[in-house]
Image (tube, rainbow, N blue to C red; front, side, top):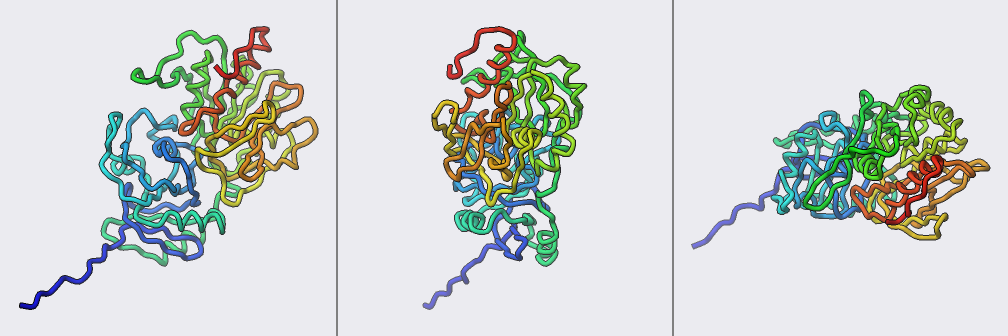
Length: 401
């Protein structure tokens, strides 16, 4: 007897990535429903997806993960990086190759899909992330709309119009969107195996951290070295910061165009530099320190996003593997006399660090807090603390414990 077979079943796409040039990429939706317009980048880290997606520096961006298996260790409340989870500062979208599986890890407290929903992050899976990565490498980071509709119904023409109309990150000050609403004191110290986070209860110095989108682990490492850390909003004035009598000043990471944030931040930094108080900057803080010193910044073609970037420290001659997340960079050729380049990317030669000659002032482009990423650059926090100790006539700590 003849048998009949059912026609090949094609799964209806429930998520789309629509690029500004009109390209439409179909996938399976997860996380929050709705849509978000942003810039698409790719991140090459193998671990730390929760830290990546909650990094405020990713505000205004959709993260494509090149590692195919994301979500298999679940999520928990310990690995987030933004200061205020309710504000949900961080990436607005996420793209995965493989479907998200049930978590299998002793620290897992929930499924990635539900966590994405709570965070308001629109996500899609099931696409060729290698092809998308190649597109970004060849054409640069595109503006796009990521959309998720469980019924698979989309107004594609409207999504194309939204993607094409978005102005992008150039000229966009996002630090004001992710910064703290008020000053606060940070006491949490780094995580220890089977113990969790500690608390700083006997500080030996006071650091004021200007929050342009700061990550928790940066503050933990400062607290772990004996600092009482006062976190202040991005638009806090120099007089107010100096009135707190800090031993050191930290300029944090953050999202958006440094020149836009610099309109209010650079004059503050320039006034702070009139003192002899040690200053340390990371990522956006590095870029704005360069602007305050007379340098320039520029938009990068594909940016640096990952946890496997080689950087050379000219002050020691050593090469470190570091974590990076930035789409803008300091133009090394624009640095004026008296500002030396201390670190450089061995991928493309771009600037990754500066120091002010003869002054206790330095910054780096990469993320030495390593959340996620290798801990090769943890010594930079000790370098900063040693500048404070030197100013007070105290013995220096070993840079590498």
